[in-house]
Image 1 (cartoon, rainbow, N blue to C red):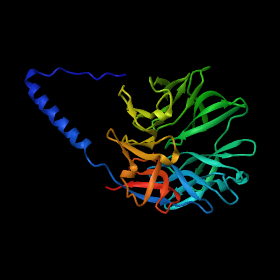
Image 2: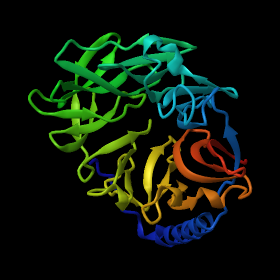
Image 3: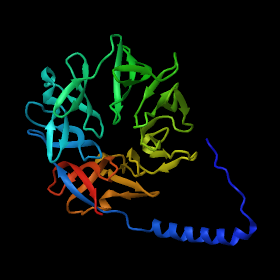
Image 4: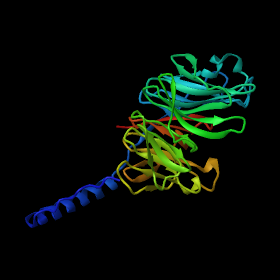
Length: 343
């Protein structure tokens, strides 16, 4: 880690430094005790025939990608990938032609409205790029290799992992960029990708260790074994080891010490706001969506009108502070939720 050089101050400055530190400490106490943002909650509509829409990603334009749940009808128990824009939720799965009788799910979403989705087939699966109401095949590798994309950035670069089938053996973390695949790890060392930011930094695993792949470099992440998300500042979010029920950790860029999180994190934005869920008694319906701001974790249910909804899972947060979640509406039905900060 790069160390910050310190310069010894003249003795005549000691009183001024002590006074400055005292004022800074007072300011920190005031900020710590400050009231956090409250949120307005909106139920998100489902597409025709679906029970509800579960939003998993939200971009900085307010568009969302997620899945539709069906308990009745021709798609019963088969989830469908869906896309939300300006009050309308579209069943994207129906654009996939002959695969409509099976399931699909979204993988990731960027600020250009591009999204990756996986559609299960009769004998295999296919990956598509969705944009502006159309699907485009994401290139696949010849057998016995199989490319599994996990994330894309705003330049349209796709991070993923190559597997060897049918053994499903992990082979190599890769970047798909401008029509070509580039291997990220060292030859002969198993590696995986987890996410990608706009700087092209890709967190993942290399030889069993947590790393960041960046510009032909492999940076070891030390205590972090399995990174899951990275923001554009280079901050890394991960589940705690050895069990995700132990909570999570975040490593802010250029800070060696990890920050422990008392919940299971799911996303971090560029303002270092983190969302996730806190499971009580290891039961889904006892979970609470949370937001971590300024070093403090808040139950989202304490920051909304309790008569509107209960937030069970918080999945993603954009740079405007909007949070996508899932929970129970005041009517008693399950629903995808959009939480927008009041400010």
